[in-house]
Each structure stands twice: as C-alpha cells, then as structure tokens.
Length: 359
Image (tube, rainbow, N blue to C red; front, side):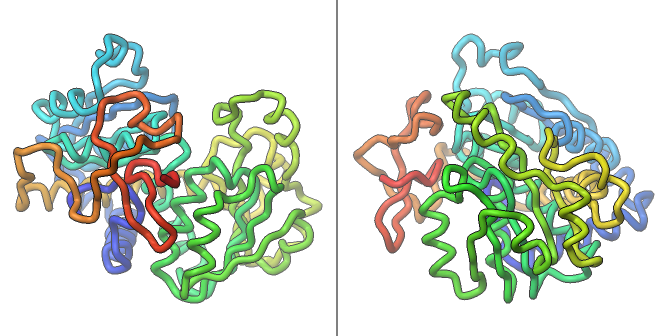
C-alpha cells in the first residue's frame, strides 16, 4: 500500500492493522506525539470540507508533523488552469504526503500516478471516500466489537453517496454481511454496484422503501443526506430531500444495541431529539476519524521511507488498459484534463479506471 485511493487498496489484514493501530493511538496518544516530527502533510481541498480537512490537520499535528495546503481551489494555481498532474508534481517537492479532495471523479488516482509522495483520497466527487470508510469501520468495531455478521441499513442518497459506495467495497473483505438498501428508486445504488453485490460471496442485499419496515432487523443504520450539490436539476433535489428522516419515534422501533452512523454534515435527515440517545454514534464517529487518519498517515509515511516510487510518470497499475473511447461521465477527471483513457476489464465489460463508469 503506497497510496490510499480506494478502500480496495487495503486488504483485510491491512484494514485490521490500521484499526488496531488507531485503537492504540486512542489509548496511548503520547506514544505517537512525535512520530511524524519533521514531516509535512499537504491538504489539497478543491471542494468545501469541514470535518475531513480539519480531521486530517488535527491528525498530522497530533503526530508531531506540520500542515500546508489550500481549502479553496480558486486561491491556487488551479484558477489559472493548472492540471492535477502538474499540481501534485509541484507539491511533491514541498511535502511528504498529500490528502486530496476534488469534485472530479478519479482526481486522486491521477495524483497518485504523477506525484512522488503518498496520496490519500479525501473524496473524489461521488465516487469514493476511503478515509470516511476507515472511520466507519473503526467506529463499528469500537461500538459493536466486530466487523463480521452484521446487518447494515444504508439509507438516503445511495446514488451519489461516495461514503456508501466506499463502505460497501470495504465490507466485501468481511463475512456474513447483509446490506439493506433503504432508498427511493431515484436515489438507489448505481446499477453496476448492485450487479457487483449480487455476485459477492460475502455480501447479501435486500431493498426497502421505508425505514420503519426494516429498522428492527439492523445492527447499524447508516444515514446519509441528499446532496444538493450533486444534482444538476434542483427540482429533483427538492422532490426527494425529505424522503428519509430518522426521528425518536422511528428509533424506538430499533434494537437497543443498534447504532446510528452518519458521515456528516446532516441537514434534516436525523432530528436533534435523538442526539442524546446512546445509539446515536455519529459524533463519536467523527472523533474516530482523527485517529484512523493518524494511523493511515503514519503507516503510509513509514512505507514511503522504505519504498521509493519510480520517477517515470504516469505510474500505471498493471490492470489498467489503454482505451480508445472517451469516458461518457461528465464529472470524470478525463472530461476536463488531457489524460490517457484507461479502462478496467470486468465480467460485464469495460469500466473507466478513473470513475468506474461503464464504457
């Protein structure tokens, strides 16, 4: 593991090692307060963020390192037309590790192909958010004591919710996982992900249209907001923004051991009257994000010290295939930057290597 671009970049053993390290950092923070002394984290945030950006900053400072970067792309050379590839090649001369959030899907993959330091994907459009997934796994482990034999309800915006997409991929490493997809048809999980779930030997899936019909079966209820910023048509957003709201009345139907997670920010999908319920774990979840990012930063920097990257760019994984056709996804990084079209071959044909859209 030289970068963290997708949850699948980490195998089960690596996931469990990170969780164990994060647990030790929570228990004994003083052991780690200078392990990254002299190291610099560059936070390249092309899209607004509060929790993720500050969590990365807090994590690096807690490890004894320092932080540089930007939180608004318009204050950087991006506003002058600089590409992701060029930006990361420059930043690699100033920092030791990069955390990048970008509104274009696949941007973090491009950064890993051109930069000479480790890259962490802090969210790329609607595609993936692996460090939120690591946060979710740590939280589930701390709250329930296991990552196997779980029934997890995913509720709300499953179409554009990158945290949902990443969690599903990560849970494929564990046994006896059942996902209940609670959503409207309009916001249901992308078809290609449903097809992958149907093929999985570790995961089973069922669909539901109302929280109250399934909440009593769940170990975890993962709520998501309907993301206004992902809608091209605001009328569509207004029509479905209030479809799924968790309140105390619904929570009373749940098991006393169930936990409620949310990647935050919330809008109105979880009412404030359940915040003091012990099952409401979303603020503890946000706190866990700092420690799992500490564990990830420390691990990647240790590996970088012993494994240098090739100076020749782009560095392409052996499973990526040059492709002649352009990706049809308008928010793929290839739609705005001049890049070689790359594909991944699967059982159902080719998908864009950057955003996973069908080619």
